[in-house]
Length: 151
Image (cartoon, rainbow, N blue to C red; front, side):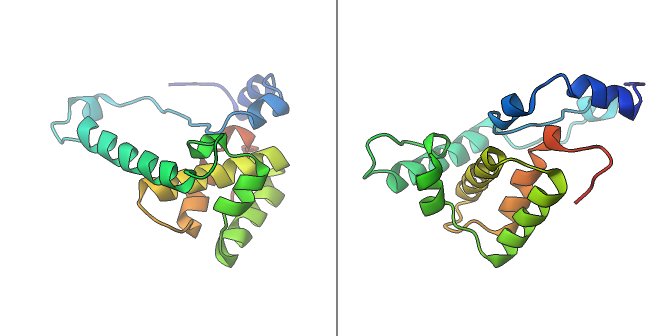
């Protein structure tokens, strides 16, 4: 178990520049797994099921971008395509506005959140990006967060 204080963790994380963090789509903290969880006999989602869900999402993306020569998946979208294919409703806009304001995210992070939101929606088979997709995508920006802030 980590015994570092919050200021120590902040100093360590500050060594990674903001512009570099902006270029990383997903930041995920992976906590240590307890022995109880490792020894559990309860099955998780199978790799085959995950693979099927990912393949369906990739098919959705291929259909979405079929008329564009340079894009095959959400990760390849640039600002123009993001504005076209990653529209969100008013509730999603308000959630994103709150996150941008509270976390001080850059325009590049904003675009990354929209692309990840689109991918989460695709993985769920949803035609529209819903507020819960935006919320989940924001959670994947953990390294942008100040430890003292919560949304």
